[in-house]
Amino acid sequence: MPNKGDSPFKFLNPYSRGDIDIFFGRDQEIEQLYQYAFQANLLLVYGQSGTGKTSLVNCGLAGRFQTSDWLDLYIRHNSDINASLIKAIRDKMEDPPAVNTSPIKLLFRLYLDYLRPIYLIFDQLEELFILGKEEEQTTFIADILKVIGLGQADDEEEKKLLAAVAAGALPCKVIFIIREEYLASLYAFEKEADGLFRKRLRVEPMSPGAARDVIKQTAATRKQVLAPVSDIIAEQIVEAIAERGRVRLPYLQVFLDFLYREAPVVEHKTTFDLPTVKRLGKLDDVLATFLDEQLADFVIKEQLAQGQAINFLKAFVSKKGTRRPLSKPELAKALPGYSQGDIIRMLNFFTDRRILNPIENEQYELVHDSLAAKLFSMEARLVEIPELNRNVLPESLFPGLLPYQADQAATFLGREVEIQVLFDKIINDLRGSVTLLYGPTGVGKTSLIQAGLVPRVQQLFPCRLINCGSTLENEQWAALFAAPVGKHNEIRILDIAFDDPLPIGEQRRFLFFDQVEEWFIHLDEEALGNLYRHLRQVFQHDVACGLIFIMREEYFSYLPAFQAKVPEMLERQYRLEPMKWEQTSILTDSLLDLLGLQKKEALHTQIMENVVDKEGNTNLSLVQVQFKYIQQQLVGHE
Image (cartoon, rainbow, N blue to C red; front, side, top):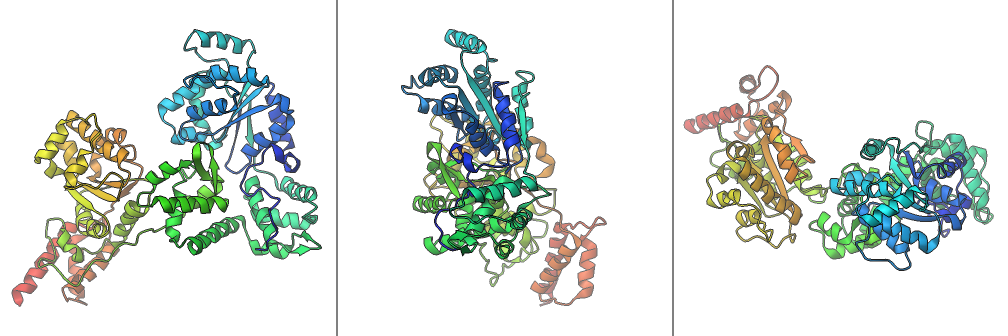
């Protein structure tokens, strides 16, 4: 890209009060919100991601007020919305009081410091419902109701303050900014007070006409560096970024930023032209190009793998595909196996490249949800699945009615796709540490783990395969079932599984629990409760330890109690499907080849008729029995 200095466009950053001279296209919404500010103490601004909700409030609405009438506190969830609220208030105060002072008390003192109307702006409130705990949400609702004069006092001082709020002595407005798909989450507020969100504004994506005006007006205000933009060029830009006839403001900013950097300079001014607009293509192409450019540059400059960078950035994406802020310590927990040095290097690199923004409480986040959505759909394979040595075959190639064992891994065929998918979920997806593998009886879950997955994983990381039925007869496990978690939070499961366990969080390791239904069948409620708590100790305190649970799907009804202790239990799951005709046919050919019986079509047909039922599902035990018998016959004829 030509070096033209700083771009006059905002890229993915929201507009602020200082940008009011270049904030166009939202006059009607600004006026509506301005009127609402005099009609209610609680305002709701909602809309799709990328419609410019934050800019509308922080720039459009803020720009309508004189500084003497506007004291804004911008608040995000961060790690706890209640702590963020208190911190935002205290940071504005001249002489903050004791730390345990409630928000309503702090707000009265803040008002006395400035004697200006206070605006509490809660941006991306959906984070509270995505990331926040129930207790945190309850506390927040109670505090906000106090601020707007509808809450219950906790002490005599608050009782007097709430009476003062009702009398209009605290000019404080609350503005919620939230994505519209999370509106239902606000029901918890409306249960406490009917009609709470009467003053609400839906921010629509821009019309093409308004977007064209924004482009032309922005160029006119930056005429020192930009040539005037014609109607034809503005129309072409809008066509490149419009979705179903509407335009999202942040996407317009991204495209204009790229266009500014790529467009030619004519008579000392950047000039938007048709060839450059067409060369950039559609918005999705621009975002993909931007990410690809930064990732490629990262590999060159930092000498680290691109997959490592993608997984690093995906740590800032929630399970819902939205942004989630993280601090450096939280990053270390979210990225087991990453060194502290690598984390710092990646933080610095992607902050410099405008992909990450530093925010409050020493946290970082992606600059916009559009990048989060893009990363959410990206796959990054950090670790390649190891190959098995198939040159040395076991004496018994097939297990008959038993599951395949680890020493038969070289002859366990037909599930290569499923092994790769599970390997990527467990090893390469760093967004969680718990995986559930389930399926009906007879689909080969145990064989898949014992002969397919564990022999590959153990080439890379320490891992243990624990048969849950065997734990019922083990003294160490019996003691664990009988004992609640100790005062010192010892992680006893790791002590049992690994004779010499590694320090907590120091290296990735994996525990596979096969036939979990054995616990459900044979342990009483108290023993199950103790077990769940011990497993939660691993989940909470050793993020480098992956937990994989394998069970029959008919025992799914037991999982809610399990999930209450291990929250990720149902977040990442994989159903092992019965093998179908085509897959079985390929498997049969492979096993016949293994026995040196290539091109035995009659035998192939006979086996298929014996092992595939009328619904097209394969009985894998019958496959194993058939081939064990064939091998025995071949040995008998030698």
